[in-house]
Image (cartoon, rainbow, N blue to C red; front, side, top):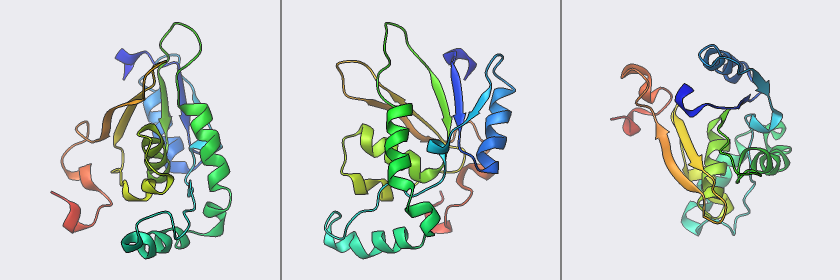
Length: 169
């Protein structure tokens, strides 16, 4: 990560994101973790029954309603703020590398937005714990998803932590 020369390190407010941010910052001189509510764990979009294909609607709506209101209600506004704060080309002629330590739902939301996918598709993306996703935003070009769900930096045992056995290699 230090080869990228990141300028900022943002993280969600939950303890696991905060702890991870501090571990990363320990390896990046001059970088100080910045808590950001936009990088939190919440439901970024509340799809209506008509948005996803009919064969997936019940499963997706069940997933959404399994979350408490405290994660659903503020989610869409936070998600839009996250897109504004963490995505898109920067002003000026210099590259800006930022690290955002966040949670699965927001990663799915940001990746879906970068790919121009329908808003509900974040529900079908399932990043692994501690996985890396890199998106490049360049003026006058579509966002480029450089890596998604990369876990090669982890030892073999924790790579699929949290995934059900039928989804692990």
